[in-house]
Image (tube, rainbow, N blue to C red; front, top):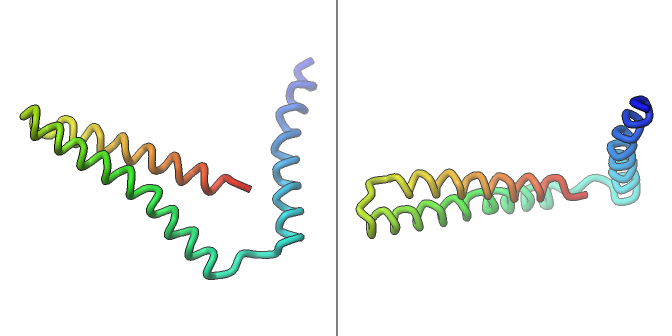
Length: 93
């Protein structure tokens, strides 16, 4: 029974690799401009939530007179969200 579970865990990665190969064979490689555009969009996906977290945290700290607690907390939360969004974008087929 454990061999069957191991086989099931390999099926999805093999299918994903086959879809990627078929996509590449049909469409070819991306152009340099498209790769640069993807790099730019990934940068904005990371920077925008990070800056939003920074500014909201600074505003809360200023209003609550709490030092830099909320600034640092929301900065890292924004960075995490931005990296997660970029990861999802990269993993799209």
